[in-house]
Amino acid sequence: MSNNDYNKQDLEPEVPIFIIETDEDAVTPEQLPAPSKNTVSVKWLIFMLLLLFCSIIAYVGYQVWERNFDIGIGISVSPRENIKKLERPIVDEAPQVILTQDTILDIGLNIYELHGLQAGLETKRPSENDQDVYLYCCSADYTAPGKYLGSLVLKGKEQTFSGLRLGYMAMYGGNNVIGISKSEKVKKYIEENGGDFFRQFILLSDGEMPLRYYLHGKVERCAMGRTENDQLFFITSQHKVTMRSFASALREYGFVDAIYITGGGHQTFYRDASGKAHDIFPGRKQGNHKGLWLVFRKRG
Image (cartoon, rainbow, N blue to C red; front, top):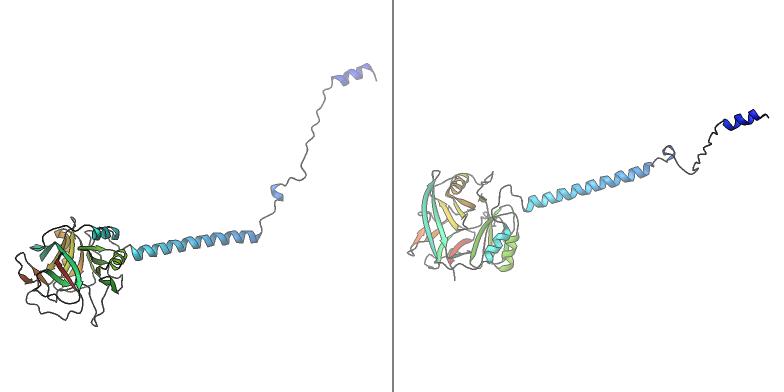
């Protein structure tokens, strides 16, 4: 080899050699095994079961809410608040019934403001000679055989149970409250403490009228009503009216809550400030009342 050949060889650049190592254990995406049909089926089954479980919980929750709380109308006082009112100290005031007469929306109203009186349910019509009695009327409705309609508690003893009528009146310890609710908390409290309780139809709740009234036709109407300042009243119509017209007049007058009281066909009584007894529906004969009387007596 000549010197020229060596020189050419020295002048030629070296070509680097790259060695790429590969991991024989590496797996490409194409080589990954496809999930089995059994695995996919189990995942879908779990998903469907969870979906079904959530649906059942939501349905049960809705049914509980609708059955025990939702009445489709506003509520001004909760059952818990009414229980607190039943437990509050008695306000010392002179017993009296103050009558006011007014005409609202062409409906004549007799409005009896109640002060210093405790209400209770009694099985017999009180004597008008009993000077402790200031007003009495009917309370819970009943069927022809004398079966009560709606929940009813007499001196702590449950007489009947039904949540179909959503208005209620509760009486305990000299305090009286009315309210609107599906809840039975107030009723249970009355049972535990030996008070009185009955249910009736709603006329007004939180100043609203329900979409439907269950009694039709025109008769003399009665109600227990509550104003925004928490004063209770007994109200009657002066003439025969429908429940809707009666409720409209009560709302217009300023009542917040009102529950219906049966009694247009029965003798209803009040005593004025002088102590004189008056029939609220004069000239009406005493009906065959098989229910309980709602009686307002002097506290003590």
